[in-house]
Amino acid sequence: MDALEQRLTELEVRLAFVDETVQALAAADSDQSMRLVVLERMVRELRAELAAMRVAQSHDPHSEPPPPHY
Image (cartoon, rainbow, N blue to C red; front, top):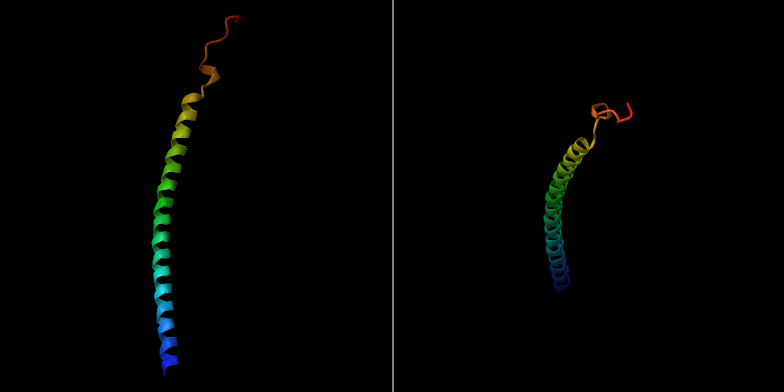
């Protein structure tokens, strides 16, 4: 019975290790998901800012006065 108890103890230790690992991975996954949400929001904001800057920098050539030689 000692061999069976030893095997059972080893399995319990391994199960505890696997459980800790799964919990750590779940926490890391949750952290990465939150970071991804933040980064996606930042990218959307940067795209909107870039679009606004492009609009501000662009100009319509028809709105410019004609050159002096006209």
